[in-house]
Amino acid sequence: MTPADGGMTAMDRPSPAALPRATAVVTGAAQVLTCAEGAPDLVGCIAGGVVALAGDRVLAVGTPQDVARRADLAAARVVPARGGIVLPGFVDSHTHLVFAGSRVAEYSGRLRGESAASLRARGVPSGIRGTARLVRAASRAQLEDEARERLVHMLACGTTTVEAKSGYGLSTAEEIRILEVQAALADSQPLRIVSTLLAAHEFPEGVPRDEYLREIVEDIVPEVARQRLAVFNDVYCDDGYYTVAESRRVLEAGLRHGLQAKIHTDAYSHIGGAALAAELRVVSADHLNHTTEAELAALRDAGVTGVVMPALDFAVAHTKPTPARTMLDLGLPVALATDMCPGCWLEAMSFVIQLACRHYAFKPEEALRAATLGGARALGLQASIGSLEPGKQADIAIFDLPSYEDLAYRFGRVRARTVLRAGAVVHEGAAP
Ligand SMILES: [Zn+2]
Image 1 (cartoon, rainbow, N blue to C red):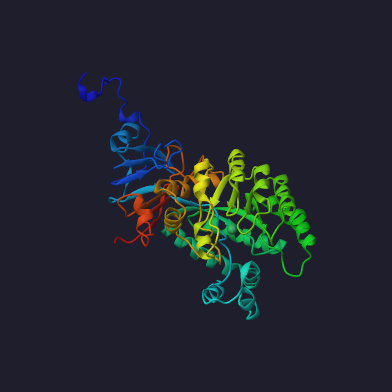
Image 2: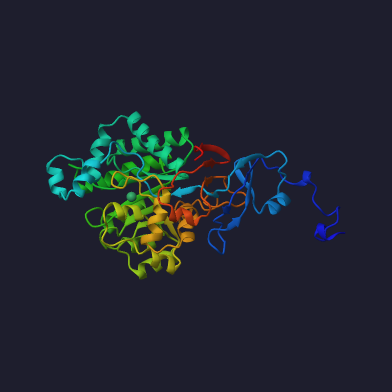
């Protein structure tokens, strides 16, 4: 026995043949950020770390020595990190991915000081109903092509899973058409898409309120569940949109049909949506600008994840930003998401991290964790994605940055060098 054997005899040492074989290995990283559940530093930072993959899964993560003890790397394809950072692909847990056209005329009109009423009078497509009109006029191919272009940018910015909501259809046929576009996209491009029904995004023009509610509860929800077009059912519970009683009807209908509940609430008013979210134990409650500390604590106790979207607050110049620091201090699990939609056109999760750190008092490690494992939790997928741990999906983003803090610090550096989804390289950026 020699000191170099670390106390093991040759007989004790596992032979390389006994080790599981790695199919690929990510090497040469300045840092590997595992974002593992129990990481005391929240991001599981391993300087000079290595990630070994077996097919679509993570096999081992650690220092080069640790990984060599746990995986046979002899036949592994090398994915070079070239001194960059290696992290779980971002999980963007709140988007309205599929829509037609844009609302740049509305946005620029507001920047020039024009009122919403004046924009409407000029016929400028505005708000949810404005986009719903554009969606109705668009072909399926147009909806798919426009959403696909956004997904290409999301992937290039390091996102590997995106939640996508319907909600610009506002009728049975149109809501289903949007979800079918999402299903087609899920099958034809690399990002994992998690679909959410949001028929209760707004009320359609020219249909009595009660009639549309009946349509959601009796027609849309059962049909979407029967066709397995969505995992989640969501509602916009806020003043001017769905009341708490209406939101309860919508969410309970989904739960009866096996659709898990999400809620948009407290973005612009305080009507009791958070209490409903805690009572129904929704998977995530999103926005929460006006939610009280007691309600946030109740959400935490109910196992709810809070989804914070700093770019939406930025886009609308919100006067009451989401109290994210309070959420973090209370121990409420938090996710960061883009809220990609016609009113907040953002593909890059790095910008969300930057806003969260500067304006919402996130520490860089809290922000990175919320953009990865937090996002996975907001989708109920924390057992399979959101961190680099053995057995989890090998969804990995590599950035040409020396440390994870640079994600918060270098504002324009948003493109990933390399992105893997389920062990396969699906994006390669140009060398600088
Ligand atoms: Zn939303």
